[in-house]
Image 1 (cartoon, one colour):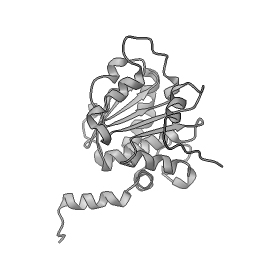
Image 2: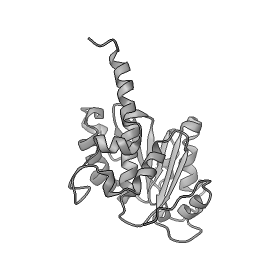
Image 3: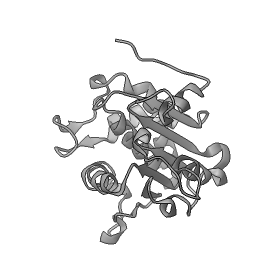
Image 4: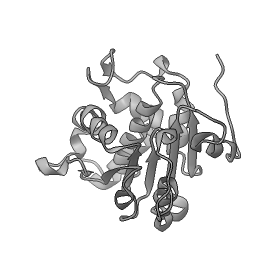
Length: 224
């Protein structure tokens, strides 16, 4: 008979997968909808993502900015971070996509398969908990929005914030703040415990991801 309670054993278990990349190896299962090579996640296939993923789980890093080529797996690394947050360091999350169509596509083709294949223990039995507005899990809620809808970006406080393909956001000319500023304002409640991830394929030097990258105090380049 164990001398530890169920909660204590769960706490010790959490430290076995202490980084996002380790958590992905232990728990992430890719489906045919997500990749041409379905099955358990393998860090050796994309070694350049390991440091990126681990930065998203590092409590001392508040913002991660990623300039990337197309189809290199970076978006999957953010879903691995979401997997890690859900299991070991939960808090409400908002993912901002460029537009409503891409938002709905990502929910159906990426987020729901992630939940179905890798987060079975954290899912509820209620069908409506996985909708086009919110993905409700037992440990945290994941909200989704798009850059052209300020209403979706200016309501609930969140701990985790992911700006997906930020350079595809439309130019902002409304009376509200731009989508990035609106989203960041939602993390104020969590202060230093919040995490902001900005990613995109680069376009011009004055576009969102390039400006954010140049503002980083620690800039790294993966070389082959």
